[in-house]
Image (cartoon, rainbow, N blue to C red):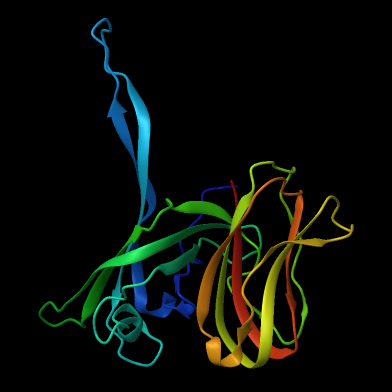
Length: 242
């Protein structure tokens, strides 16, 4: 893939699309502790890999409207949320484009105002048990399923054997209950079976987000499906092969 611009980057936090309130992404990645294993009889430092830490930092605009930056980032009665936050950042608008995903704790939320400017904000997320994961989107940013159906097939190039993690954000659901599945097959036109199923969500439960994990072989061809009786589920889904 060629070098790409950031024009199609999006920011999804716990089922909320905060892209319209964010103006820059300062970092979405991880650091890895390097532990010194240098012996007396060596001439240079040697190291082994230790713990990793994922992090995401973004800047944006203070927006106090329902579902926008301030209510989402201070959703714990005006304080930082205490629970885990599932963050998904697509770096493109098509199925197969890369994403960064993180299960995290919100560690910083600061607002500021320079003279003659709007109120701005900075928010930082740090990993909760896993590092930042990079994978491929199975939706084109977010997709709308008006009823149960399937998404575009993604060709992973080859099967892999170490399992996978999946990220699902459900932004809205007009009615009913939807279940989002990731399915796999050995050929693009073959028989698809569920490899990962996210929790069923009723209309009152949206917006919401979840990370799922599976072990073993992940087949070459992958797609999103939705099941249930519902109307207009707006979803974003990505897969990270471990």
